[in-house]
Length: 363
View 1 (cartoon, helix red, strand yellow):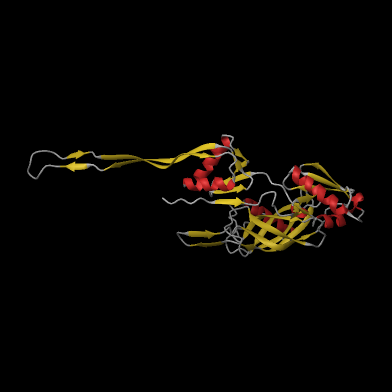
View 2 (cartoon, one colour):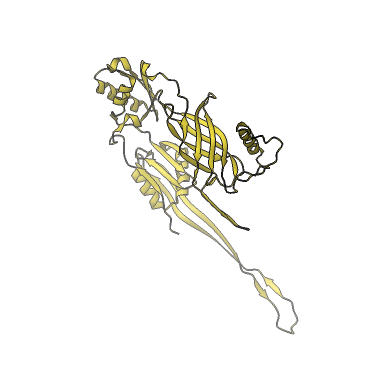
């Protein structure tokens, strides 16, 4: 049996790490988007909409919409198959102004088979505070396809979800007086004291004064007044391009479903012994039938015959020396010929024994 070991190795150590822009390492306090959501109707479907008996809310939404447009459908029975109820989601970017356009995602909430070719009717999008910040409308671009016959049906992709590029227009702005902020807070995407200290040193060196202060492992505060610049926007524009060498923790990440293993270059393993192998038990039944010759006295007898065997596949006990680095670990496990899923079990056991000096994450 040929086994393949899939291991992705991060060979960049902290000492030789490339410098990264601050804008890629932190989030700026106050500079954030806001999620929007709404529900509405998609029309113009080619018989792939909601079954109104299974999705009565679609009929209710459609009746309310028609009444707002001046058509009275109270008490009427209509069963169109070209209408689907949907959720519409989007994100209001920071500092978005009225009249700007944003992308939206449309997803069916009923039993519609496909939104391909449908048109979203004007749908208000609400923020977390319940206020309407944008209105969406337009033709949906769906990424899936459905083909069916009398006895078979095939689906590729997700035809019940799609996007409308620039499909919503901003109607309300988020009130935020960014220009009057006395200070800025830089929130690290991956909290680390060493990285935060390096950001503080780099910012102070850039401005030639003590304008930045590390508050904790995930926050660095910048005093706008001490920079001598006109506004927080000018300070941010200068901060974004400053280069910093981030520090990363030793980490092992495994995905049990795909068998993928990612290990950082700083991973270390203490001295430990590892045994790995497979036990195969095989039992084969091949009964022998014995019967008398024609016209002879006697009876047919089935004689049982079994063949049992036990096979082991693997090696004995292997020792991993103390202080072993990533390259030696991978080379040793490859020499054992273990499969990715077996390697995951080995790493789990080494971690449980306290010999794996890294953060162990299992997805």
